[in-house]
Image (cartoon, rainbow, N blue to C red; front, side, top):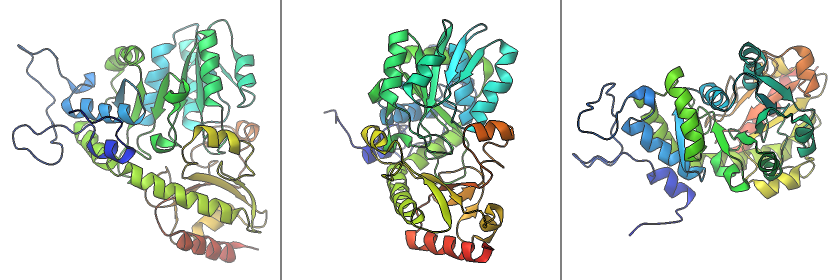
Length: 384
């Protein structure tokens, strides 16, 4: 009997396990072979073709979590998104991109697309009207990021998906900040969902990977590009990722709970100017976020008051780490101007509301009271 409608943690634990037919091991074996026999077999396996046993089975887990037909795993989030873009854009085509999004994506578009004669427009905002106004006759792709990095803006997923269908334009989303635990964009009509799997899929700050999920037709187009560019993930790292994803539901729910607590607490502190978190009722898109997210996510950003230097504040932290990346089980903070958005010019950062004093906060699984205590002591050690 086939078990249907399995819950999140069941999918995380069991879907995508490579069967150990010979020894009946409880966990997936690793197929480290880079060469497979091809005579008298239906599938010609090769790591660069994204079809080793470990690659294929992990793709099934990701597809199940994102409610899609299939998925592909890449060597990084940037490999995933760049291959996705290149599969649907050619010389002379145009893409509409949300103005508030990960700096690496923005930089890739600004630096690489002119070399390929691909036109692009960054929207003036994140409302559906902003996207519609940017569409041109040669627009082939609309790309959004919600919640966005690092300002946690919320874009109406269903409205963007409907716009794409009306105009016969493919739509894609970076779902990294939410993760499948908190948001499933396919359910609202989006065509392609990508992730930096380094983040919540990995969750332990020891893996670099990316993923794209969608229909078989769309993923076939991406595969046709990706097999030529490379960018697949090694089977050992695929195995590590599959292992890590078994606890993703538990991790992300605990992290999201912490984010809710810390956002509400920070919002009441006199040393904070503003908190950016869609779970706060004061967030301008709180109701929209509530309608399309199952949880508000484990990321938030905040700005300190002027007489607290953000760099000095982060240096005083004892428990929370001032470090790159996000979504590990340990809480981290960083300055987007020095890291994720450092490749943008100061003018480009100000255009999208990223100030030098902005701090991005990735919540881990520590006790909320300990995180609050660490922030308080760092403020007291820094305030002038």
